[in-house]
Each structure stands twice: as C-alpha cells, then as structure tokens.
Image 1 (cartoon, rainbow, N blue to C red):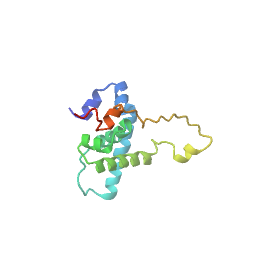
Image 2: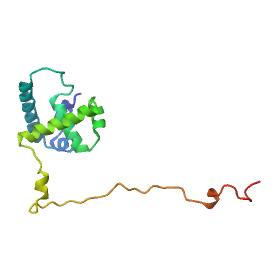
Image 3: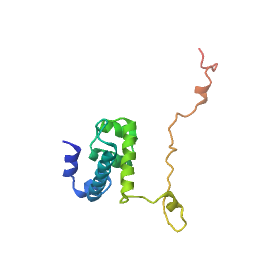
Image 4: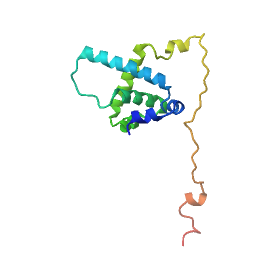
Length: 149
C-alpha cells in the first residue's frame, strides 16, 4: 500500500495529527508546489535526471521534517534518498510555498517588533541526571595492608 493510499484512508482528525496540517491545507500546498515545479520545468527545460520522489512524497518529506523534528538523515533513509537530497527537497518545497504567498510565517523582523506580542516558554532539557556508582574509599585505594594476603 502506497503512502497516498494510506493518507486517503485516514479520517480528518487522524490526518491532521499525522501530517500536521488539515487535508485542505495539504491539498492547497500540493497544488502550489505542482504549479511551482511545472513553471520551473518550463524555464529550465526537461533535461536532467528524473526525481526519485513524486511531488506528494516531496511535500510529505518536508512536512514530516517540521512535524517530527527528526534528522534529515533519518527522513532521507525512510524515503530512500540521501541526507543532502532530503535537505534540498525541504528547501525547495519551502521556497515554493513561500513564493506562492499563501503560506508564510512572520519574518524575524516582525517577531522583534515591539507591537507584536509573542508568548513562549523555554524548557531546558539538555541536562539529565545520570546514575553513577557511589564512591567508596575501599575501591579507590588498591593496596590496603589488611586486604593483602
């Protein structure tokens, strides 16, 4: 069963939980990406190697990268492409969606403006306690006279 067939069987609620966007948003993103790719092909011609991933798979790769925060190496492995191809795919899909001007996030300048209110919580999870064996004087000093026989 292909990914497309699996996605079509999902309910709206499960689709959003798995992909990260609503089905309508996903379809709109896919349409914009296809238009972008077709226009790019017209400008550059049809030469070169055929892409290993379909347009849908490329969009899913990008959405999966942002949804799951996995490394590009893991995502590339899942889709059968290299890490660098996964990175190029993410950047290309991002570029296409940003150029369409239908999908965007506020720029850094917008975020730094004083009239923009942003509320966030930062949690530091980098330090985690590690269980270590307790130190014992007997273990440190190797040659005690009473222990030597």
